[in-house]
Length: 113
Image (cartoon, rainbow, N blue to C red; front, side):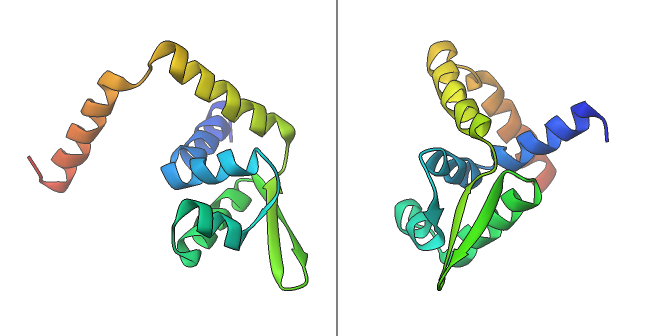
């Protein structure tokens, strides 16, 4: 894979809203699945599914302690990336016009108007 392909895969992985929320929470420190489920108000199976995807992309790693599995980011640079991205979004107000175009394309593919 080229660097551009690796970067695109990474961005697709963290670009899913629930995964981005998980990464944002893990940027503040290690959490167990139960904590993530509670904070995000999502089903445990959904959180586990997203954690598996993040783990496959080497974004998070796990550690088991007794009956609980704890997750954390694999690299502190990922936490900085999330903080920097949030600051950039506030500063530049990016992605407002493109959002409409993405929704329109998705609706055209699914047959909706």
